[in-house]
Image 1 (cartoon, rainbow, N blue to C red):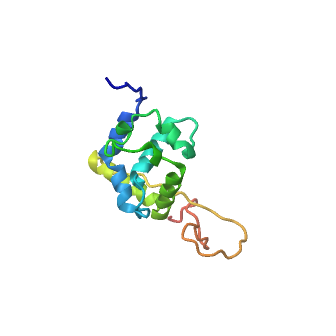
Image 2: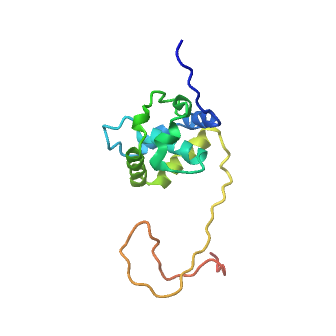
Image 3: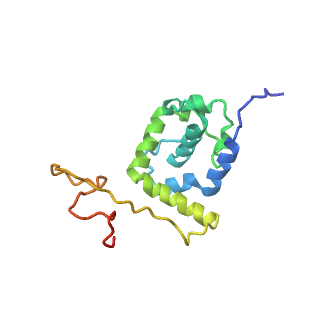
Length: 165
């Protein structure tokens, strides 16, 4: 008879099924650049492992994801890839996955996942609140390089006093 090994399950199987149902890994893999062809764990699956780590560990240490994963039944965390080798879960792979997500634009990934959830659960989107809060800036500033991630400050009027938005 083989040895019986104890693994923690906690809520991980439930979260694993949710991310599998939504196909979080597939959505991410469809958006990011595959990049490292030598990697045995794709970016989407690694991000799902990070989600487990972030939600399940009080001491969030992405550099120690292997340590976090050692006592978990990995096939329950990522049921679409049950054969993950613990040696492939390391800080180098975490860094490369985060770089790929950043390069692909995290907001684009989040929007794709949100759209998938809306579709799967047939959520009513006929009424959605969009926050259009005014932002005001006062003072002088030097001309900045045009960076697409930095808002461009222009002359105008905010919506606080209406004249009709």
